[in-house]
Image (cartoon, rainbow, N blue to C red; front, side):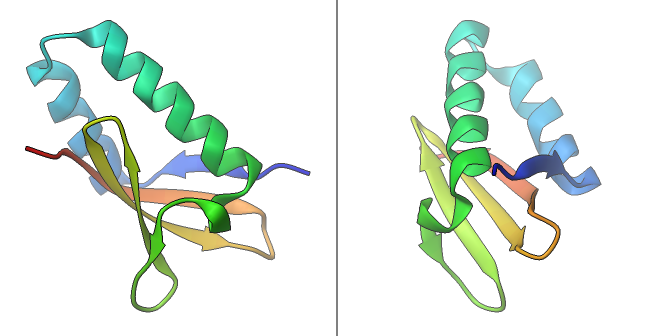
Length: 84
């Protein structure tokens, strides 16, 4: 059974900023698809744990923060940025 992946408003704002500043939209789309697929399949195996249910993940040159709501099988992405 898979997890639902959603973005909170701060994460959506970060994503919008990335979208408007990226040079290669196709690569960004591919990275986001890989990120979404991994989180939907098994989010607790993605990235590294941080304080209080927070995790940090990495995909291509992107870094993102998320939480996992196990009872509701939901992943909430709260931030994303480009690693330099």
